[in-house]
Image 1 (spheres, rainbow, N blue to C red):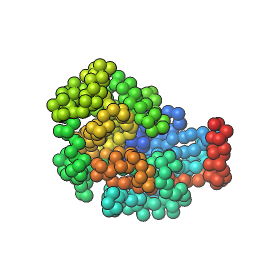
Image 2: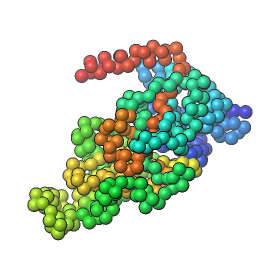
Image 3: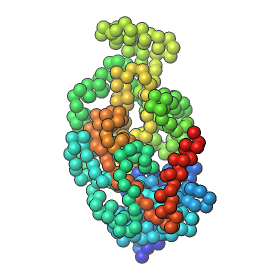
Image 4: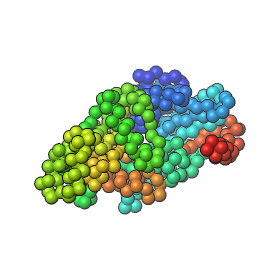
Length: 398
């Protein structure tokens, strides 16, 4: 009944993804081109000659000839169908043995829970049938590595905030309907507020605009003491996700803003600051940016991904970054998305990212986390001693 391949044709792989609900971009064929410092496989499982599951495997050498198999946000399979899942597991495990991988690590694209910031829990699209999916994996020998609230403990953030742009029946909302879900105090800073002050937003997939994007990312890196990607990484994204990856810019027409301040009794210090900025930069200044990726799947639940952001420290009180995110949400609605994933947050929900993202009627998606499928006996000593050795190595490196 079943046949398996570790070298699935791109056209077949893409067709499956297009018809798979809630497909993550990290399981798209092209993601292997972005993660080109890993080796990869593109696998497919056929049942009665029909393709029923696919996955993209990233392969990394851990030490000597020992490797790790990692399947980010995969598999793309019906996790409630234990028969298909069992055959897929057996074939992936056999492939891992052939390639000296000691473990297959997956972090599936479904949630343990979906909560509003009012502590209202609903069984929605991402959390539907969670218990069945989780238990099926455990029955087949996968070991759940636990829930990690801290960012950076898992390969992918376990807690994400998503802006829902559909109702409980998965009907996509209009922009006005989405706005009605926001608090009045927050809505005040969107739309007309920005227009009056000369703020406007630009959407582009022009690679030549990446320098400005990266420049703003560097400001954010320095401000938050974090390290993001280099320009070459974003070139690969724009080249591989053609017509689905977009850079958003939040710009301010300084001349128009200057006139607004003069007409509305602006403070002399603010007026002088704007005048100086015009002398230094000209009339137009870009102060906010972000990268949005539209989903490949055409059927089922579609989720856009807000991947990276950069912001200048100028004009923070004008909430230009909030306007930028709202432009992304509007763009997602125009492109028939049900959610806009605003990205990872600390699971304790006490960080500055959470405070910002919850304003968009955000829902906290607690993803199920990582599962390890041990392949070799050395999985257990590596799991025990590798974290200790890594800490020692980091101390020595300092």
